[in-house]
Length: 480
Image (tube, rainbow, N blue to C red):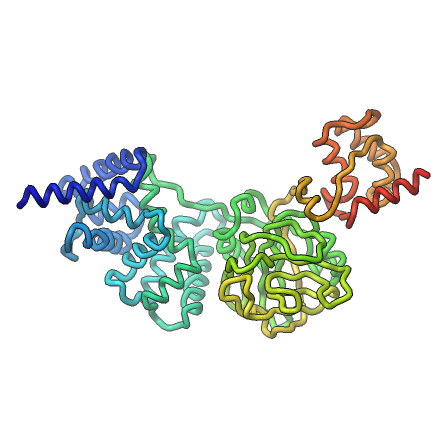
Protein backbone atom coordinates (compact mmCIF):
# COMPACT_ATOMS: atom_id res chain seq x y z
CA UNK A 1 0.00 0.00 0.00
CA UNK A 2 2.91 2.28 0.73
CA UNK A 3 4.28 1.74 -2.77
CA UNK A 4 0.85 2.37 -4.28
CA UNK A 5 0.58 5.64 -2.37
CA UNK A 6 4.06 6.68 -3.46
CA UNK A 7 3.29 5.89 -7.09
CA UNK A 8 0.03 7.84 -6.91
CA UNK A 9 1.76 10.85 -5.37
CA UNK A 10 4.52 10.74 -7.95
CA UNK A 11 1.92 10.70 -10.71
CA UNK A 12 0.18 13.76 -9.24
CA UNK A 13 3.49 15.60 -9.07
CA UNK A 14 4.28 14.79 -12.68
CA UNK A 15 0.86 16.04 -13.73
CA UNK A 16 1.43 19.26 -11.76
CA UNK A 17 4.79 19.81 -13.44
CA UNK A 18 3.04 19.72 -16.83
CA UNK A 19 1.66 23.18 -15.99
CA UNK A 20 5.16 24.66 -16.39
CA UNK A 21 7.44 24.79 -19.40
CA UNK A 22 10.76 22.94 -19.47
CA UNK A 23 12.82 25.93 -18.34
CA UNK A 24 10.48 26.61 -15.41
CA UNK A 25 10.57 22.95 -14.31
CA UNK A 26 14.37 22.89 -14.32
CA UNK A 27 14.51 26.18 -12.39
CA UNK A 28 11.91 24.91 -9.90
CA UNK A 29 13.83 21.72 -9.15
CA UNK A 30 17.13 23.57 -8.82
CA UNK A 31 15.74 26.35 -6.61
CA UNK A 32 13.84 23.93 -4.38
CA UNK A 33 16.90 21.72 -3.85
CA UNK A 34 19.11 24.74 -3.16
CA UNK A 35 16.72 26.04 -0.52
CA UNK A 36 15.84 22.63 0.99
CA UNK A 37 19.50 21.68 1.39
CA UNK A 38 20.03 24.52 3.83
CA UNK A 39 17.18 23.60 6.19
CA UNK A 40 16.58 20.88 8.76
CA UNK A 41 15.30 18.32 8.17
CA UNK A 42 17.04 18.04 4.81
CA UNK A 43 14.89 17.92 1.71
CA UNK A 44 12.11 20.12 3.12
CA UNK A 45 11.50 23.88 2.97
CA UNK A 46 10.78 25.62 6.27
CA UNK A 47 8.97 28.84 7.16
CA UNK A 48 12.29 30.41 8.11
CA UNK A 49 13.78 29.45 4.74
CA UNK A 50 10.82 30.98 2.90
CA UNK A 51 11.15 34.18 4.92
CA UNK A 52 14.86 34.46 4.15
CA UNK A 53 14.58 33.45 0.50
CA UNK A 54 11.66 35.73 -0.37
CA UNK A 55 12.76 38.62 1.87
CA UNK A 56 9.40 38.72 3.58
CA UNK A 57 8.28 38.82 7.20
CA UNK A 58 7.89 35.61 9.19
CA UNK A 59 4.17 36.43 9.48
CA UNK A 60 3.71 36.29 5.70
CA UNK A 61 6.04 33.30 5.38
CA UNK A 62 3.94 31.37 7.95
CA UNK A 63 0.71 32.29 6.14
CA UNK A 64 2.27 31.32 2.83
CA UNK A 65 3.40 27.95 4.22
CA UNK A 66 -0.10 27.27 5.50
CA UNK A 67 -1.56 28.15 2.08
CA UNK A 68 0.95 25.87 0.33
CA UNK A 69 0.02 23.01 2.67
CA UNK A 70 -3.74 23.51 2.33
CA UNK A 71 -3.81 24.19 -1.41
CA UNK A 72 -2.50 20.70 -2.06
CA UNK A 73 -5.09 19.01 0.17
CA UNK A 74 -7.61 17.99 -2.53
CA UNK A 75 -4.83 16.17 -4.39
CA UNK A 76 -2.42 14.91 -1.74
CA UNK A 77 -4.68 14.60 1.27
CA UNK A 78 -4.94 16.62 4.50
CA UNK A 79 -1.89 18.14 6.09
CA UNK A 80 -1.18 19.01 9.69
CA UNK A 81 -1.85 22.71 10.14
CA UNK A 82 1.00 22.91 12.66
CA UNK A 83 3.59 21.80 10.12
CA UNK A 84 6.26 24.41 9.45
CA UNK A 85 7.93 22.55 6.57
CA UNK A 86 6.81 21.35 3.15
CA UNK A 87 8.08 18.63 0.82
CA UNK A 88 8.70 18.86 -2.90
CA UNK A 89 5.57 17.05 -4.08
CA UNK A 90 3.13 19.13 -2.02
CA UNK A 91 5.07 22.29 -2.91
CA UNK A 92 4.81 21.61 -6.66
CA UNK A 93 1.09 20.86 -6.56
CA UNK A 94 0.37 24.06 -4.60
CA UNK A 95 2.57 26.12 -6.86
CA UNK A 96 0.37 25.22 -9.85
CA UNK A 97 -2.48 27.07 -8.13
CA UNK A 98 -0.35 29.95 -6.87
CA UNK A 99 1.23 30.57 -10.31
CA UNK A 100 -1.70 29.38 -12.42
CA UNK A 101 -2.38 30.90 -15.82
CA UNK A 102 -5.94 31.44 -14.57
CA UNK A 103 -6.41 34.69 -12.67
CA UNK A 104 -9.15 33.29 -10.43
CA UNK A 105 -6.83 30.45 -9.27
CA UNK A 106 -4.08 32.92 -8.35
CA UNK A 107 -6.52 35.03 -6.37
CA UNK A 108 -7.95 31.98 -4.60
CA UNK A 109 -4.45 31.14 -3.44
CA UNK A 110 -3.84 34.72 -2.27
CA UNK A 111 -7.12 34.60 -0.32
CA UNK A 112 -6.04 31.29 1.24
CA UNK A 113 -2.75 32.90 2.31
CA UNK A 114 -4.63 35.76 3.99
CA UNK A 115 -7.56 34.00 5.61
CA UNK A 116 -6.35 30.43 6.05
CA UNK A 117 -9.78 28.83 6.20
CA UNK A 118 -11.45 31.07 3.62
CA UNK A 119 -13.12 33.07 6.41
CA UNK A 120 -12.89 36.76 7.27
CA UNK A 121 -9.68 38.80 7.03
CA UNK A 122 -8.86 41.38 9.68
CA UNK A 123 -7.72 44.92 9.03
CA UNK A 124 -4.34 44.05 10.60
CA UNK A 125 -3.89 41.25 8.06
CA UNK A 126 -4.87 43.50 5.15
CA UNK A 127 -2.44 46.14 6.39
CA UNK A 128 0.33 43.54 6.70
CA UNK A 129 -0.04 42.21 3.15
CA UNK A 130 -0.27 45.75 1.76
CA UNK A 131 2.91 46.69 3.64
CA UNK A 132 4.72 43.69 2.17
CA UNK A 133 3.52 44.59 -1.32
CA UNK A 134 4.54 48.23 -1.06
CA UNK A 135 7.97 47.42 0.42
CA UNK A 136 8.69 45.08 -2.48
CA UNK A 137 7.50 47.42 -5.23
CA UNK A 138 8.55 50.89 -4.01
CA UNK A 139 11.99 51.69 -5.51
CA UNK A 140 14.78 51.65 -2.92
CA UNK A 141 16.22 54.95 -4.16
CA UNK A 142 12.93 56.81 -3.71
CA UNK A 143 13.47 60.12 -1.85
CA UNK A 144 12.11 60.01 1.73
CA UNK A 145 11.12 56.38 1.20
CA UNK A 146 10.07 55.50 4.82
CA UNK A 147 7.64 58.44 5.04
CA UNK A 148 6.29 57.78 1.55
CA UNK A 149 5.80 54.09 2.34
CA UNK A 150 3.77 55.00 5.42
CA UNK A 151 1.63 57.51 3.49
CA UNK A 152 0.95 55.02 0.70
CA UNK A 153 0.13 52.29 3.22
CA UNK A 154 -2.33 54.47 5.15
CA UNK A 155 -4.10 55.50 1.94
CA UNK A 156 -4.25 51.92 0.66
CA UNK A 157 -5.73 50.50 3.87
CA UNK A 158 -8.29 53.28 4.08
CA UNK A 159 -9.32 52.87 0.44
CA UNK A 160 -9.55 49.07 0.61
CA UNK A 161 -11.96 49.10 3.56
CA UNK A 162 -14.02 52.08 2.42
CA UNK A 163 -14.66 50.37 -0.90
CA UNK A 164 -15.96 47.31 0.96
CA UNK A 165 -18.27 49.20 3.31
CA UNK A 166 -15.95 49.93 6.23
CA UNK A 167 -15.65 47.78 9.32
CA UNK A 168 -12.67 46.08 10.94
CA UNK A 169 -12.61 42.95 8.77
CA UNK A 170 -13.54 41.66 5.31
CA UNK A 171 -15.44 38.55 4.37
CA UNK A 172 -13.98 36.27 1.69
CA UNK A 173 -16.43 37.80 -0.79
CA UNK A 174 -15.25 41.30 0.11
CA UNK A 175 -11.61 40.27 -0.23
CA UNK A 176 -12.39 38.86 -3.68
CA UNK A 177 -14.02 42.20 -4.61
CA UNK A 178 -11.00 44.07 -3.23
CA UNK A 179 -8.63 41.88 -5.27
CA UNK A 180 -10.70 42.63 -8.35
CA UNK A 181 -10.03 46.34 -7.84
CA UNK A 182 -6.48 46.15 -6.45
CA UNK A 183 -4.73 43.94 -8.98
CA UNK A 184 -1.26 44.72 -7.67
CA UNK A 185 -1.99 43.23 -4.24
CA UNK A 186 -3.96 40.33 -5.70
CA UNK A 187 -1.05 39.26 -7.91
CA UNK A 188 1.71 40.00 -5.39
CA UNK A 189 2.14 36.48 -3.96
CA UNK A 190 2.01 34.85 -7.39
CA UNK A 191 4.67 37.21 -8.76
CA UNK A 192 6.78 36.71 -5.65
CA UNK A 193 6.78 32.90 -5.94
CA UNK A 194 7.25 32.91 -9.71
CA UNK A 195 10.22 35.27 -9.54
CA UNK A 196 12.02 33.09 -6.96
CA UNK A 197 11.17 29.54 -7.98
CA UNK A 198 10.36 29.47 -11.69
CA UNK A 199 13.43 31.36 -12.90
CA UNK A 200 17.16 30.77 -12.68
CA UNK A 201 18.33 31.95 -9.27
CA UNK A 202 20.08 35.32 -9.43
CA UNK A 203 19.74 36.49 -5.85
CA UNK A 204 16.83 38.59 -4.58
CA UNK A 205 14.34 39.27 -7.36
CA UNK A 206 13.70 42.91 -8.14
CA UNK A 207 9.94 43.52 -8.07
CA UNK A 208 10.15 47.31 -7.86
CA UNK A 209 8.28 49.35 -10.41
CA UNK A 210 9.19 52.73 -11.81
CA UNK A 211 7.77 55.65 -9.87
CA UNK A 212 6.43 58.41 -12.15
CA UNK A 213 7.93 61.80 -11.35
CA UNK A 214 6.82 65.37 -12.05
CA UNK A 215 8.92 68.04 -13.77
CA UNK A 216 7.28 70.77 -11.64
CA UNK A 217 5.33 70.99 -8.42
CA UNK A 218 1.65 70.07 -8.53
CA UNK A 219 -1.08 71.56 -6.37
CA UNK A 220 -2.95 68.24 -6.35
CA UNK A 221 -0.53 65.32 -6.84
CA UNK A 222 1.70 64.08 -4.04
CA UNK A 223 4.40 61.36 -4.31
CA UNK A 224 2.08 58.78 -2.73
CA UNK A 225 -0.46 59.44 -5.49
CA UNK A 226 2.24 58.95 -8.12
CA UNK A 227 3.11 55.56 -6.64
CA UNK A 228 -0.54 54.50 -6.68
CA UNK A 229 -1.10 55.77 -10.23
CA UNK A 230 2.09 54.09 -11.40
CA UNK A 231 0.64 50.63 -10.79
CA UNK A 232 -2.02 51.27 -13.46
CA UNK A 233 -0.02 53.16 -16.08
CA UNK A 234 1.73 51.77 -19.16
CA UNK A 235 5.47 51.46 -18.43
CA UNK A 236 6.35 54.07 -21.06
CA UNK A 237 4.46 56.65 -18.99
CA UNK A 238 6.88 56.29 -16.06
CA UNK A 239 10.21 56.49 -17.87
CA UNK A 240 10.78 60.25 -17.54
CA UNK A 241 9.31 63.10 -15.48
CA UNK A 242 5.89 64.24 -16.65
CA UNK A 243 5.71 67.62 -18.30
CA UNK A 244 3.26 70.18 -16.96
CA UNK A 245 1.12 71.17 -19.96
CA UNK A 246 -1.47 73.34 -18.27
CA UNK A 247 -2.15 74.93 -14.92
CA UNK A 248 -5.09 77.22 -14.34
CA UNK A 249 -2.97 79.22 -11.90
CA UNK A 250 -0.39 79.94 -14.59
CA UNK A 251 -2.37 79.89 -17.84
CA UNK A 252 -5.70 81.26 -16.67
CA UNK A 253 -9.25 79.95 -16.79
CA UNK A 254 -9.21 79.61 -20.56
CA UNK A 255 -10.57 76.52 -22.29
CA UNK A 256 -8.83 77.54 -25.51
CA UNK A 257 -5.46 77.67 -23.78
CA UNK A 258 -6.19 74.39 -22.00
CA UNK A 259 -7.21 72.66 -25.23
CA UNK A 260 -4.29 73.95 -27.29
CA UNK A 261 -1.82 72.73 -24.68
CA UNK A 262 -3.12 69.17 -24.54
CA UNK A 263 -3.73 68.52 -28.26
CA UNK A 264 -1.50 65.81 -29.75
CA UNK A 265 0.59 65.43 -26.59
CA UNK A 266 0.22 61.66 -26.23
CA UNK A 267 -1.00 60.07 -22.99
CA UNK A 268 -2.04 62.68 -20.45
CA UNK A 269 -3.30 63.00 -16.90
CA UNK A 270 -5.87 65.75 -16.25
CA UNK A 271 -6.68 66.77 -12.67
CA UNK A 272 -9.71 68.72 -11.47
CA UNK A 273 -10.49 70.28 -8.10
CA UNK A 274 -14.01 71.52 -7.42
CA UNK A 275 -14.89 74.38 -5.09
CA UNK A 276 -15.73 71.92 -2.31
CA UNK A 277 -12.18 70.58 -2.37
CA UNK A 278 -12.82 67.24 -4.05
CA UNK A 279 -9.90 66.28 -6.31
CA UNK A 280 -10.21 63.75 -9.12
CA UNK A 281 -8.83 63.12 -12.57
CA UNK A 282 -8.38 60.79 -15.48
CA UNK A 283 -5.63 59.14 -17.47
CA UNK A 284 -6.20 59.48 -21.23
CA UNK A 285 -4.26 56.83 -23.11
CA UNK A 286 -4.58 58.56 -26.50
CA UNK A 287 -3.63 62.04 -27.63
CA UNK A 288 -6.43 64.54 -27.38
CA UNK A 289 -7.80 65.85 -30.66
CA UNK A 290 -11.00 67.58 -31.69
CA UNK A 291 -13.67 65.18 -32.86
CA UNK A 292 -17.43 64.92 -32.63
CA UNK A 293 -17.13 61.33 -31.44
CA UNK A 294 -15.54 59.29 -28.67
CA UNK A 295 -12.09 57.72 -28.99
CA UNK A 296 -9.41 56.16 -26.74
CA UNK A 297 -9.00 52.62 -25.39
CA UNK A 298 -9.34 50.51 -22.26
CA UNK A 299 -5.98 51.60 -20.84
CA UNK A 300 -7.76 54.82 -19.84
CA UNK A 301 -9.11 55.15 -16.30
CA UNK A 302 -10.45 57.72 -13.86
CA UNK A 303 -9.45 58.20 -10.23
CA UNK A 304 -10.26 60.07 -7.06
CA UNK A 305 -7.61 61.72 -4.86
CA UNK A 306 -9.66 63.64 -2.28
CA UNK A 307 -11.39 62.58 -0.12
CA UNK A 308 -9.93 59.08 -0.82
CA UNK A 309 -7.59 57.73 -3.48
CA UNK A 310 -9.42 55.21 -5.67
CA UNK A 311 -8.95 53.91 -9.21
CA UNK A 312 -11.89 53.16 -11.53
CA UNK A 313 -10.85 51.05 -14.48
CA UNK A 314 -12.60 50.33 -17.76
CA UNK A 315 -15.73 48.20 -17.52
CA UNK A 316 -15.39 46.86 -21.11
CA UNK A 317 -18.99 47.96 -21.70
CA UNK A 318 -18.17 50.65 -24.29
CA UNK A 319 -15.28 52.67 -25.72
CA UNK A 320 -16.54 56.12 -24.70
CA UNK A 321 -13.26 57.24 -23.16
CA UNK A 322 -12.36 60.65 -24.66
CA UNK A 323 -14.39 63.45 -26.22
CA UNK A 324 -13.27 66.94 -27.25
CA UNK A 325 -15.41 69.24 -29.35
CA UNK A 326 -15.84 72.98 -29.83
CA UNK A 327 -17.89 73.15 -33.03
CA UNK A 328 -21.29 71.74 -32.09
CA UNK A 329 -24.38 73.88 -31.60
CA UNK A 330 -25.65 71.62 -28.81
CA UNK A 331 -24.45 71.50 -25.21
CA UNK A 332 -21.94 68.74 -26.00
CA UNK A 333 -19.01 71.07 -26.55
CA UNK A 334 -16.11 70.81 -24.15
CA UNK A 335 -14.08 67.88 -22.83
CA UNK A 336 -15.79 64.66 -21.81
CA UNK A 337 -14.63 61.37 -20.29
CA UNK A 338 -16.83 58.30 -20.10
CA UNK A 339 -20.58 57.88 -20.21
CA UNK A 340 -22.35 59.35 -23.20
CA UNK A 341 -23.35 62.71 -24.61
CA UNK A 342 -25.55 64.60 -22.14
CA UNK A 343 -24.76 62.01 -19.43
CA UNK A 344 -21.00 62.30 -19.04
CA UNK A 345 -18.85 60.54 -16.52
CA UNK A 346 -16.78 63.72 -16.28
CA UNK A 347 -17.31 66.83 -18.40
CA UNK A 348 -15.64 70.25 -18.42
CA UNK A 349 -17.52 73.09 -20.05
CA UNK A 350 -16.14 75.42 -22.73
CA UNK A 351 -15.65 78.16 -20.17
CA UNK A 352 -13.64 75.87 -17.89
CA UNK A 353 -15.77 77.30 -15.11
CA UNK A 354 -18.23 74.46 -14.56
CA UNK A 355 -18.27 70.71 -14.84
CA UNK A 356 -20.46 67.67 -14.36
CA UNK A 357 -19.79 64.25 -12.87
CA UNK A 358 -22.65 61.80 -13.04
CA UNK A 359 -22.97 58.29 -11.68
CA UNK A 360 -23.42 55.61 -12.67
CA UNK A 361 -21.09 55.74 -15.67
CA UNK A 362 -21.12 52.57 -17.76
CA UNK A 363 -17.61 53.16 -19.14
CA UNK A 364 -15.88 52.61 -15.78
CA UNK A 365 -16.42 50.00 -13.08
CA UNK A 366 -18.34 51.07 -9.94
CA UNK A 367 -18.03 54.70 -10.93
CA UNK A 368 -19.37 57.09 -8.25
CA UNK A 369 -19.82 60.85 -8.40
CA UNK A 370 -16.24 62.05 -7.84
CA UNK A 371 -17.15 65.70 -7.28
CA UNK A 372 -19.02 66.98 -4.22
CA UNK A 373 -22.10 67.56 -6.41
CA UNK A 374 -23.04 66.25 -9.88
CA UNK A 375 -22.78 69.82 -11.19
CA UNK A 376 -19.80 71.63 -9.78
CA UNK A 377 -17.80 74.83 -10.02
CA UNK A 378 -14.19 74.36 -11.16
CA UNK A 379 -11.57 75.63 -8.72
CA UNK A 380 -8.41 74.37 -10.41
CA UNK A 381 -7.30 72.28 -13.39
CA UNK A 382 -3.91 70.77 -14.24
CA UNK A 383 -2.80 68.71 -17.25
CA UNK A 384 0.37 66.62 -17.42
CA UNK A 385 2.02 65.01 -20.44
CA UNK A 386 3.23 61.52 -19.47
CA UNK A 387 5.73 61.38 -22.37
CA UNK A 388 7.52 64.76 -22.37
CA UNK A 389 8.86 64.78 -25.96
CA UNK A 390 5.89 63.04 -27.54
CA UNK A 391 5.25 63.62 -31.24
CA UNK A 392 2.15 62.31 -33.07
CA UNK A 393 2.70 59.82 -35.85
CA UNK A 394 0.99 59.77 -39.23
CA UNK A 395 -1.71 57.32 -38.16
CA UNK A 396 -2.65 59.50 -35.21
CA UNK A 397 -2.98 62.61 -37.35
CA UNK A 398 -4.98 60.68 -39.92
CA UNK A 399 -7.38 59.52 -37.20
CA UNK A 400 -7.84 63.16 -36.24
CA UNK A 401 -8.67 64.09 -39.85
CA UNK A 402 -5.38 65.90 -40.42
CA UNK A 403 -2.92 65.58 -43.29
CA UNK A 404 0.83 65.73 -43.51
CA UNK A 405 2.12 67.43 -46.63
CA UNK A 406 5.84 67.74 -47.36
CA UNK A 407 7.44 71.19 -47.28
CA UNK A 408 9.65 71.56 -50.35
CA UNK A 409 11.55 74.75 -49.56
CA UNK A 410 12.25 77.23 -46.83
CA UNK A 411 9.76 79.80 -48.20
CA UNK A 412 6.92 77.36 -47.47
CA UNK A 413 8.32 76.80 -44.01
CA UNK A 414 8.44 80.57 -43.49
CA UNK A 415 4.79 80.93 -44.53
CA UNK A 416 3.66 78.26 -42.11
CA UNK A 417 5.75 79.87 -39.40
CA UNK A 418 3.82 83.11 -39.92
CA UNK A 419 0.50 81.29 -39.80
CA UNK A 420 1.35 79.71 -36.46
CA UNK A 421 3.19 82.73 -35.04
CA UNK A 422 6.36 80.72 -34.78
CA UNK A 423 8.76 83.26 -36.31
CA UNK A 424 8.87 86.65 -37.94
CA UNK A 425 11.55 85.86 -40.51
CA UNK A 426 12.73 82.95 -42.59
CA UNK A 427 16.12 82.66 -40.96
CA UNK A 428 15.02 80.22 -38.30
CA UNK A 429 13.01 78.29 -40.87
CA UNK A 430 15.94 77.95 -43.24
CA UNK A 431 18.13 76.82 -40.36
CA UNK A 432 15.66 74.12 -39.38
CA UNK A 433 15.22 73.05 -42.99
CA UNK A 434 18.98 72.70 -43.32
CA UNK A 435 19.16 70.68 -40.12
CA UNK A 436 16.64 68.28 -41.64
CA UNK A 437 18.62 68.17 -44.87
CA UNK A 438 15.79 69.60 -47.01
CA UNK A 439 16.67 73.24 -47.64
CA UNK A 440 17.33 74.04 -51.27
CA UNK A 441 16.22 70.60 -52.45
CA UNK A 442 13.12 68.95 -53.70
CA UNK A 443 12.41 67.53 -50.24
CA UNK A 444 14.05 65.09 -47.86
CA UNK A 445 13.03 61.65 -46.72
CA UNK A 446 9.43 61.00 -45.72
CA UNK A 447 10.41 60.82 -42.07
CA UNK A 448 12.26 64.12 -42.14
CA UNK A 449 9.43 65.82 -44.02
CA UNK A 450 6.99 64.57 -41.41
CA UNK A 451 9.10 66.08 -38.64
CA UNK A 452 9.28 69.42 -40.44
CA UNK A 453 5.53 69.50 -40.98
CA UNK A 454 4.90 68.66 -37.35
CA UNK A 455 7.07 71.55 -36.23
CA UNK A 456 5.74 74.00 -38.81
CA UNK A 457 2.12 73.28 -38.01
CA UNK A 458 2.70 73.36 -34.29
CA UNK A 459 1.83 69.71 -33.79
CA UNK A 460 5.23 68.92 -32.33
CA UNK A 461 5.52 71.59 -29.65
CA UNK A 462 3.66 74.41 -27.92
CA UNK A 463 1.20 75.61 -30.58
CA UNK A 464 -1.44 73.55 -32.35
CA UNK A 465 -3.11 73.88 -35.77
CA UNK A 466 -6.69 72.66 -36.01
CA UNK A 467 -6.31 71.61 -39.63
CA UNK A 468 -3.29 71.49 -41.89
CA UNK A 469 -5.52 71.97 -44.92
CA UNK A 470 -6.40 75.45 -43.69
CA UNK A 471 -2.71 76.25 -43.41
CA UNK A 472 -2.14 75.04 -46.96
CA UNK A 473 -4.99 77.19 -48.26
CA UNK A 474 -3.52 80.21 -46.50
CA UNK A 475 -0.11 79.38 -47.94
CA UNK A 476 -1.55 79.22 -51.46
CA UNK A 477 -3.25 82.58 -50.93
CA UNK A 478 0.00 84.21 -49.75
CA UNK A 479 1.98 82.87 -52.69
CA UNK A 480 -0.54 84.35 -55.12
